[in-house]
Amino acid sequence: MSLWGGRFEEAPDELLWKYTVDTSDRRMLLDDLTGSLAHVTMLERVGVLTGEDGTALRNGLEQIMAEARDEKFIFLESDEDVHSAVERRLGELIGDVAGKLHTARSRNDQVALDLRLYMRRVAADRIGQLESFALTLADAAERVGETVVATYTHMQQGQAVPLAHHLLAYAWMLQRDRSRFGDLLQRLDESPLGAGAGGGTSLEIDPEVSASLLGFAAVFDNSIDAVASRDLVAEYVFVAAQAAVTLSRLAEDLLLWATTEYGWASYLDRHTTGSSAMPQKKNPDMAELARGRAATLVGDVTSILTLQKGLPMAYNRDLQEDKRLLFHADDTLAGTLAALQAMIAGAAFHPPEPSSWVGALDLAEALTSRGVPFREAHHIVGRLVVELSASAKTLAEADLISLRAVDARFESGDLDRILPGDSVRHRTGRGGGSHESVAIQIAKIRQSLT
Image (tube, rainbow, N blue to C red; front, side):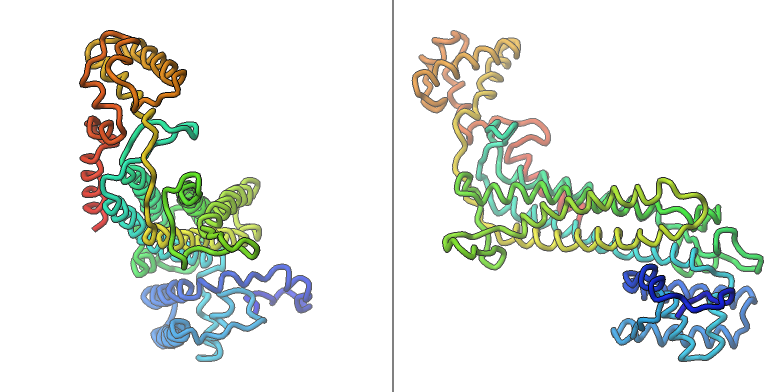
């Protein structure tokens, strides 16, 4: 069914139909029905529709809503989009009065509304997933206890930190991803319904009524902007992409940790795959796909921005393509969140102890605490590293004699800073890699999410 055609003497060519019809918007069926019910109620309240017509339209829409919720609504190949499918089914149920549903409304403001309703709904779902994942990371951080690992800078071991501190870094990143969705929800909180095709309507309607019925805090101020702008879709895609990039970084760590070379973690059999040729293999494929699919979301961001950049005001059919990008980005993020959360929840962590070289900075800071300029202390410990390495020794094998052979200002207590566990215990700075900091972080994360 088409919502246009009166001006045309020929039916649409099959080629045109196949090229222009997009069935991806069918997932917005409930959103479209929700918007239509509010629109009908508003039209009846302001007297544009009679009570009889309003009741008929509302009853028909509610019946379709029930079909949609029970997954019994049937789309036809002749339905041009979700809007035409609803109006076609409404006509089957209540007859010609169904034609009054589109009064004082265009597909332009209708789709703009559906998009906002859809994004508002799924953004809440993603926020819930991100919160749950952050709590799973907090649980994992508590589970690993006082296990100590090395941080890596330039892929070289740097400092000793609790493994929990590393896991919680991702929890904080997910918290910011969550807050970005929350910020977007504020900008989505404005109804475009009533903007019509771009210039509004001459009928006496009240957009504030439908906005209130739909739970929006505000109504559009410019009808052209209301139907022609897709910056909010672009923002949603970006926010999803940024969250996917966070997850991609986590996926990379999960992949490295599972290697023989790292040996930090292993994952449940049900969360891994095997090799068709090598019987010993246990592959963390979900993490690899999370990393790969993040790239497709970066592509979605580029596409949605490019889609808008040269469009004249007001509405152009190019904007039909925004939905594919939005749906793909959201679906991909939802799946990746579920996959990686399951991997973390089922992971067994068993990292080897870091190299004793991770205590080098602690030795430099010991000198600094006694008044030695840090740059000088850095140079002194660097010389110590060279001399120990030349003797095929590690920092753990250093004694007070070898320390003082490099600089007489070293003291016996400095040896208590060298081992990774000792290094962590000497660290007291706010938010740093200490067990005390980890406990504070876990409490903060749980408090903010429960």
